[in-house]
Image 1 (cartoon, rainbow, N blue to C red):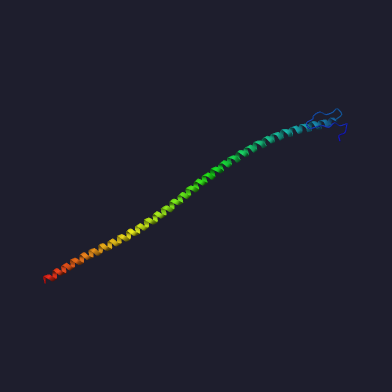
Image 2 (cartoon, helix red, strand yellow):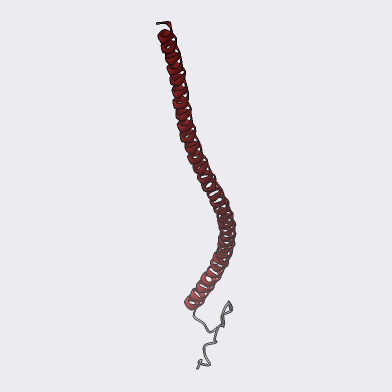
Length: 139
């Protein structure tokens, strides 16, 4: 409970009663100025804090937007990769078909050469037979 001889000063009160000692009055004035300066510093700090929060929120929104863009780009690249793999598989199948066709055509060519050689051989045998018949008839 406050004493009746000393008045109670509230926050920001700069008035001092006449009964107060001059040193106490100076101390109270100095403290009052210090409190005012601290209030100003606090207001500046609060303003800085608010601007930093806004800057952090902007950075967070930008990061979120960039993250969405990166996710979208990843999806596009995965789609391209899937399409590329499908194309590679198709090309492997086409290559295997081409190799098989080359082997088949090589085998068919060899068979045709063998038939041609055989037919040439038959012609040669016919000529030799004809020549032998003709020679035996001449004797």
